Amino acid sequence: MATDLTVAVLSGKGGTGKTLLSVNLAAVAQKATYIDCDVEEPNGHLFFKPTILSERVVTIPKPVVEQSLCDGCRICTAACAFNALALIGKQLLVFNEVCHSCGLCTTLCPKKALTEVEQPLGVVREGQHGTVSFEDGILDIGQSEAVPLIKALLRNKHKDLVVIDSPPGSGCLVSEAISGADFCLLVAEPTRFGAHNLAMVHELVQILGKPCAVLLNKTVEGAENPSEEYARSHGLSIMGSLPYDRTLATLTSEGLIASEELDHYHAFFSGLLETIRKEAADASDTHPQR
Amino acid sequence: MHQILILSGKGGTGKTTVASAFIHLSQAKAYADCDVDAPNLHLVMGSFETEQKQDYMGLKKAFIDPELCIGCDACRQVCRFDAIEAEPQYHVINIACEGCRACAYACPQDAISFVDSKVGDLRLLQRGDEHFSTATLIMGSGTTGKLVTQVKNQLKQAVDPNEVAILDGSPGIGCPVIASLSGVNLALMVAEPSVSGISDLKRVIASARQLQVPVAVIVNKYDMHEQKSADIEVFCFKEGIPFLGKIPYDREAVHSLNQGLTLDQISSNGAEAVKSIYSRTLDLVKETMKG
Image 1: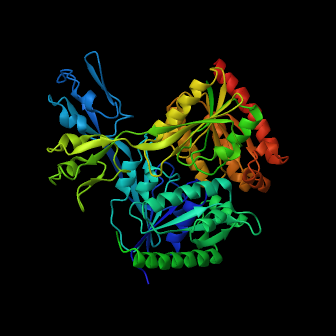
Image 2: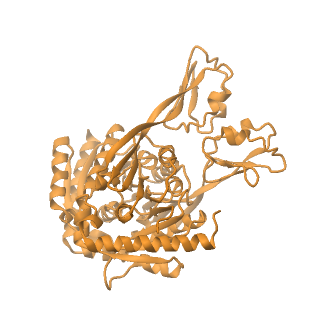
Image 3: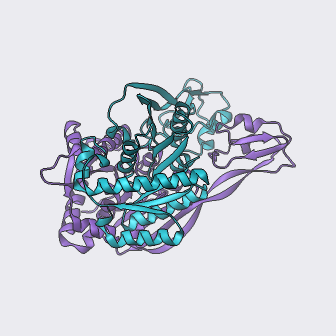
């Protein structure tokens, strides 16, 4: 039974298997939308190789000065919290790299010497791979503000299953990417680094009040697993483990989707998706929509 | 302070593994973890004698006084960061607020004030003449770029200007990476032999080059996919990017890192590889310092 559900896959540490999991979960669902929110380094498209149906440029407004109208009153420079404006001699300068596009300076300028001009930030694409609807965002090189691009990417409303491939880390990009998620699947590798960053994202999803569970990736029979130890000692539900497999690593290196190549991986990811659906349904019963 | 920054674009390719081995091999007096979003370098650097810790304050965040608010909605309309919610009463969502103050200017009631907000901890650790600068960010916070700049600045102030600092970078190409690239003598890219690793490598190289930072490349776990590893070498050759070597996959490496050892401390192929990469990196940095 398919119901509307948004699952975010995140990990704190990079390279633990976020894209592997999100791509395969979307691929085994009857109908799903995969959204790659790692706009700095998007990789989902390398696996789905989607037919791109639309591509649009996302812009952010930046103030532009008409020097002939500026009388040097310094209202804007005093008001800007980011020090993105400076009056040097009689020239008003705007530093786009530190401007947050809040619009305050333009609103305040008594001489209307500042106007906002939309500048490109990146692109948002939509495409299709079999039954999977594909969306991703690609930040332009040299741009530092990925949040508005993630917001643009998540603006569409979806039905059925949505799988969000989150950026690494536990900062503002991640909280933006997972803001609409019903359930967070954390992925962790069996290293101290993995466990440390797992603890960080676990804290983040708890702050945001999201139901979550962890999948232990790259596990080795009999070997130590600091991430598993963390989960067990912190009441974090373990949803399963995906043992280290050289074949899986090779498929992934080549941009192939394991669940489309090998039956046992199709079965594994289908089972995982079922478990996620069940846990998410239980969580929404106990935590009615906030 | 001269700076070698370890980057990768993609996460999990081995930045911290390489950075910690370099620090150990060079007996570095100055090093920093610029991955404030998910710092890990401290896990393999052992214990320190002294620690200076200070609160890292971000921009003050808006606070709406419910007594004064008349619910006119002006603040919510002007906020571009979706940081104000009307229900159950007008309030600010702290992690979304960027502190721009547009709401306060819009408020006809003067109901909005600004309160201190701590976004992280800045740490300077010392052991003899070794300095380690690192930070942790409070979950979900923004302004990571500024915190990275602080991490680098406090190190710069603490050490001799002729010191060569090893900086462990963060994944991606956005604000923390751009901040970490500032003033760097060489950005050493740790690539992974996979379609994702190559795609991400190209984007991070383009980002560094835009800021005129010299780059060099190594491949980690090259034997996971020798063809892709060869593709990376060819790419570097075509682009005129120094290729400084490749490190084999090593099960032992995971074990030793889990024990808090650095890669060069264990006798294996990986350790040999990282040693020769280190000496080539140093030669290259010396060249860039001359040039």
